[in-house]
Amino acid sequence: MTTTYKQPPRRAVTLNQHATEIMLALGLEKSMVGTAYLDDKVLPEYEAAYKGIKVLAKEYPSYEALLSVEPDFVYGGFAGAFDEKEGRSRDTLAKAGIDSYLNIEGCTSGPVTTATVDDEIRTIGKIFGVPDRAERQITGMHDVLEGVKQRLDGIDPVKVFVYDSGDKTAFTAGGAGIGNEMITLAGGTNLFADVGKAFGDVSFEQVAERAPEVIVIYDYGDEPVESKKAFLLGNPALKDVPAIKHKRFAVLPLSSTVLGVRVPAAVESLARQLHPDRFA
Image (cartoon, rainbow, N blue to C red; front, side, top):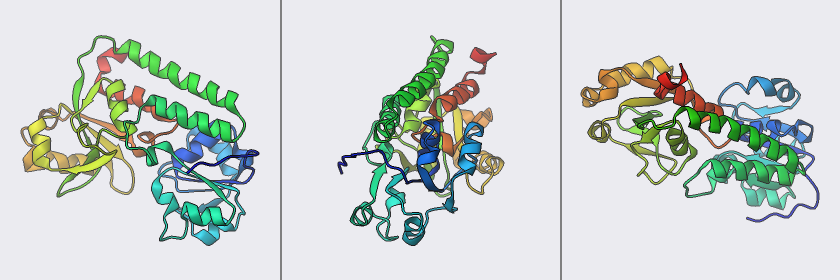
């Protein structure tokens, strides 16, 4: 879908945290009339701006709730933001005269890299007529990534398995999402990079065969990290896995592992957990 903008949107709604935080990072809160669906608290630096925006729903709003704020633009982080069954499809919005945009990670087959993050921020900057702000944001993000790269110079990558969720099978990070690139930049190797999607299911036997040295737990929702650790430590299929034997876990909030402004800080956080000696 290609959209031509004659002027920047003035009544934007963001659906999903990473879309919201990109807008706030670019200082666009005055162009926002609504927002919805946080996985986490917004970053402290955006809290004051976020408080001034109407929250339409805890998760995705109904089509009626969306229309109630008379948006001229809807920015979705995940494809589910534009669910046809819920009446929020992009075609439906277009018929109502509302432009829409889906985060690149939701409409690409990968691989997603930090260059894709730059593209996303540039595109939003362009749509809203603030390209200079977008470039400043990108420069700041790359400064953080460069600092991590220098710290990790010459390291041997650590073998990593991402555990998102699942008890019969493991829902893990594949090779097509930004999570895969983040692991690489943090000095790791994603053992399931051959899964050709951003996320996918693998068996615990496959995890055991690939013998991860560190398990990265994605933290979100109602299940605490400690209960995820306990489940993995007690899983008989994993008893001989190095990460389990040595109880080597790293943790990232899910809100940091999607295509948005949190990526560089999350890469640094993961690098500190995978290679603590380089950050001592």
